[in-house]
Amino acid sequence: MTTVLDGLRSRLRERSAVIGVIGLGYVGLPQALSFAEAGYRVLGFDIDAAKPEALRAGRSYLLDIPSSRVSALVSTDRLAATSDFDRLGGCDALIV
Image 1 (cartoon, rainbow, N blue to C red):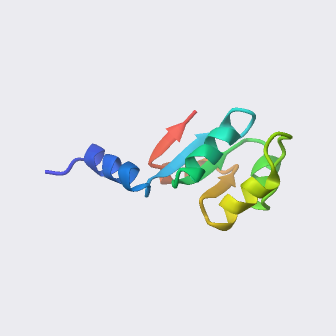
Image 2 (image 1 turned 90 degrees about the vertical axis):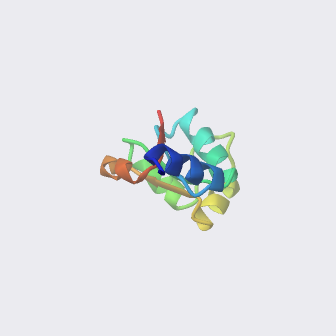
């Protein structure tokens, strides 16, 4: 019998899980990028709508993260961002 946890483990192993990262500041954005670069689809959340807007445009707002790194992940659908917290349910795992 397959459980919900077995399904999650399988999606994590296969890198098909959607990872949600809450807060896209100096800690959250690098975490989101790391998960996306590891092959996961990442949905970042922030209450400051300007941050998701910049990321969706492929722009970084942190000095030590080049926009080219962000845009590469956005263009391959590995990284998305929103200020709509109703979308939390679409994530398999959440990083706070």
